[in-house]
Image (cartoon, rainbow, N blue to C red):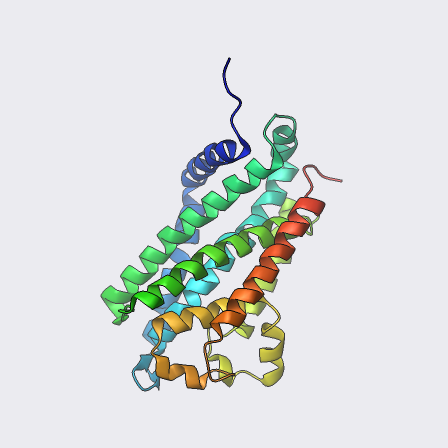
Length: 264
């Protein structure tokens, strides 16, 4: 008698399928993976000034783009594609199979993580090759980088799945989700030095995870001396961890309680 696969095993298989389906959509692959590189090329070419001793704008911008990429690849992509899958009945058909809902979520998480790793490698490689990006040399910074990517990816995935119930249709999902992401990018110090933003913007941004992800990535790619120019004059990594964990819990809660498999 064949052993029934566990939810994790089915989720891993589902993740492989998600990756293959994503790879077949060439336009989505190019836009998702290369968009941060394109932005780095634009902003890095326009802003070549030094914003602090030993810190170029490109060095600052890469930290923000990695954090922003977690949100784009996870939250934005899922909050748009899941309503589209719901519209065409793909989710309803999946719901009719023995596969548990957790396996579907695991599959999406695997897709987001793999996409994010590729995106980061492209961004770092391009930054080193063309814009003089200096990579961290301390092992502690790479450890911080690892948990930021893992926790940020998980948080972004959970929130994207949870928010996918908000758009009424796949056709209108982009109009609902994209403005939110763009506003958060401006508020969170992705495109501008965070402390140069108006205080009310800083306070609004501090509610959401992108600000903390961006600040955490700055602690990895910028010198320790730059911490004095942050709002709290420190990197606040413990606060970053706590905020991301809270948002991860919120995302998981609403993903489980409110997720819709078919249209109302």
